[in-house]
Amino acid sequence: MIVDYDKMVAFHGHSCPGLAMGYRMTVAAMSYLSQYRSEDEELVAITENNACGVDALQFISGCTFGKGNLIFKDYGKQTYTFYARKTGQGVRVTLNRAAIPEALKGDRPAYIEWLLAAAEKEVVSLQGVTIKEPEKARIMDSVVCESCGEAVMESRICTQDGKQICIPCCGISPALADS
Image (tube, rainbow, N blue to C red; front, side, top):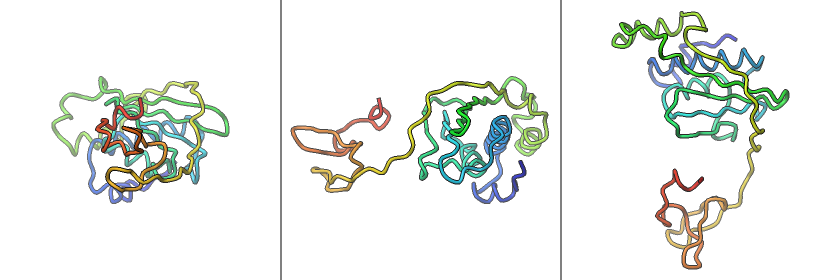
């Protein structure tokens, strides 16, 4: 899989270790699954962080929030799981933090260079996984919040004192809203 790293950097805004991590992780996972960039929802990615590498994941894989094939789990781990709908095959890819030479961590350019050049097995761990097929994206109706008057996806409405209101007006933490 050939990806123009400079175009990816332009998409993200700067070159950084996180972007290089996401690049290596995504390329390794897509190679494992024999997948190409997802035009629609053929490929689903589940990210366990919201760091710079997720921009690489989106740029390379075509999995995006807008298409509904990028799922965010706020676990704070440098880990992605990819699922290929056509084959039902999944892979979990994790950054091998222990393999990163300590001396590089303070030298960003050298760290990036190492991340991009090191052997795949030094940078990432791949594990085939079986997961329940993620739902395809659904178009939801909008409902007007009876408190603030803003339109909100019907699946994100809560009922309080008999009124349909949005999550912020309910006072529910967004992290708890999906629980």
